[in-house]
Length: 68
Image (cartoon, rainbow, N blue to C red; front, side, top):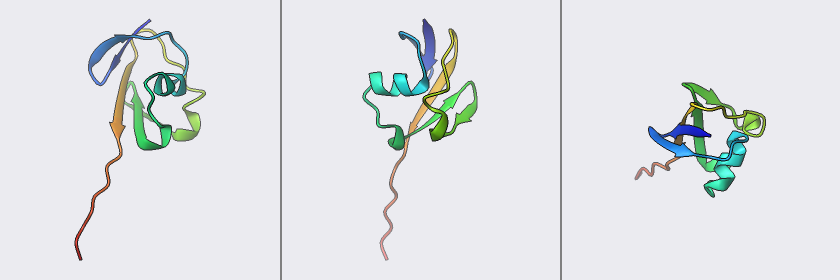
């Protein structure tokens, strides 16, 4: 099925958001996920299933270092 990931159309085999992250070798704790403009809580990654045409945004967490 086809979904858009960060604005780019991609063919995926289906499944949950967690399945997608695992297929892309992305650690779930290192990314924020939005599906169709709704943030997906980390506790729901395995139970949020993707459908044809869904828009997925993956945003990596960044560390901000400040000097004291």
